[in-house]
Image (cartoon, rainbow, N blue to C red; front, side, top):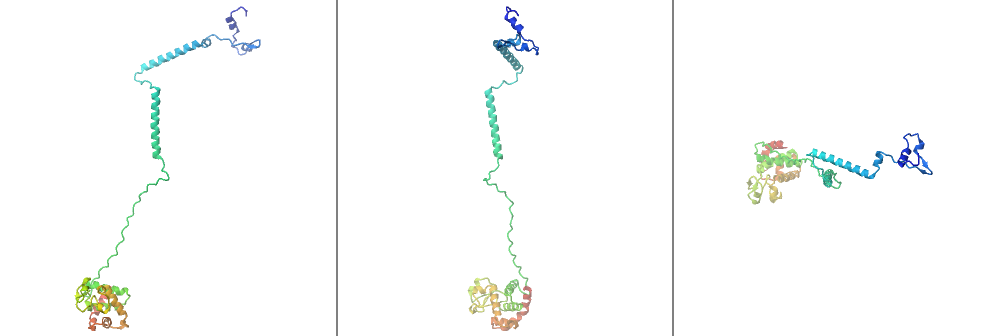
Length: 283
């Protein structure tokens, strides 16, 4: 290369070749300094200029704008792009709604705390039947020509004797005595008006004698109120009979007379047969 040749000519001649094996063309030195790589002509040289880059970017932007405008005009039904601020506000509102719905759902599904009292479950109530009242004892069927009232009084006399564990003969003695004294009716006394205040089945006039056995309060058998109760009258009769020595070996008349001390001692014997039938029916 001649020293008088232009610089462009020098740069052109100095451009290395594309052969990778040419090590001398890849790196050259002038003295102690490295030779800078020469500027290449063509597209790279043109892009290296800043004003050219700005112009090229401006042109591309304009082309994109024209394409977007053409596309927008070609689709008249497509909504206009939403401003960024409005889009962000709408997204925030949707997020809040989702969060609130999630909170409600979490609250509804939240487990009950241990301190909360569980709702007691209702169990079917057991219907308890009231205890049945003891059945009333059936009234005994009358026998030996007795009325129902007479048979009821005879049952009271027999029941009391059984409670005291008296033998069958004592029952016959007691029934025979009541048949003679009151005809098995609970009688008041015309002499004692007080006796009429208690349940009775008629009245008699033999002094102050009252009740089934016509026992006298004045003789120490008991009060008028006591003697007007058939069960009490029968009880005191049995207790007095038990105190008679050897009453079991006596006749019905003798045993009854030993208790009653009646003015007609032989009158009790006539009732022995009926009293035996009644005792057998009730005991």
